[in-house]
Amino acid sequence: EPEVTQTPSHQVTQMGQEVILRCVPISNHLYFYWYRQILGQKVEFLVSFYNNEISEKSEIFDDQFSVERPDGSNFTLKIRSTKLEDSAMYFCASSRTGGNEQFFGPGTRLTVL
Amino acid sequence: GQNIDQPTEMTATEGAIVQINCTYQTSGFNGLFWYQQHAGEAPTFLSYNVLDGLEEKGRFSSFLSRSKGYSYLLLKELQMKDSASYLCAVIYRDSGNTPLVFGKGTRLSVIA
Image (cartoon, rainbow over all chains, first blue to last red; front, top):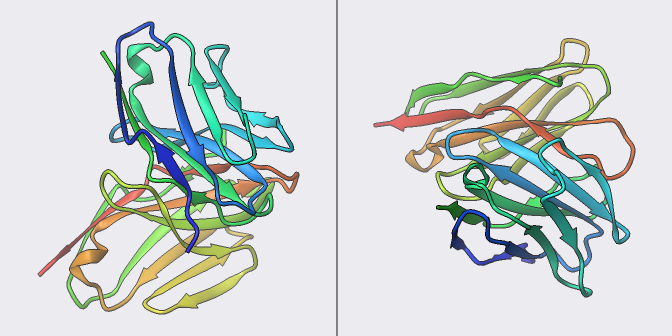
C-alpha cells in the first residue's frame, strides 16, 4: 500500500540554524500539507500546497518557513533560522483531492537546542 | 476560532464499548474525520462523515449530526492495542486544498 515517507526521522539542530525536512507524498496525490505537533499538544496546520504553489498558510507559517516541490516527488519544508519553540513533530500529509482523507507520513521529530 | 472540543482522557475495560464525543463549530463545516494516533506516531485515518448518520467500519463506528455540530466515535470489543489518542478533525469550506482543524485529542486507556 502506498504511503507518505519523511526524512529524517529525527533532527537535532542548534538555535539559528537552517533545517530542511523532506517528504515524499503518495505518487498520484495532488494536494500536500505540513502540520506540526508540539509535544503533548494538538496537531496544528502549517501550510497547504497545490499546483506548485501555496494554497493556504496559518499564522505559524511566518517568513522563517518556506516550502518547495523541487522535483516530481519531493516536498520540502525549510525553516531558515530555527528557534527553541520550533521543537516539535512535523508531519507531511497528502491527499488525492482537496476535501478527501489526508494520509500522514511518520513525521520528523525536530529538536532545537 | 474554529474550536473543536473532545474529552482529554478516557479509560475503558478490554472487551467493552467506549464512545468518544466531539463538538465543533458548524459555520462552514464540510466534513469530519477521526484519526487514531499512537504515542510518537503519525495520525492514521479511521473514518469520514459528511452527512448525518452512522458510518460503520468493523469495530469502529462514527456518527455525525450536522445541525448539532456533534460527532462521536464508537469503539466496540475494545482491545489493549486500542490504547491511543483519538483525534477529531474538521474540514471547513469547500475550496479545494483546505486544511484539517484538529481537536486536542482524547487519550484512551484500555485496561484489563
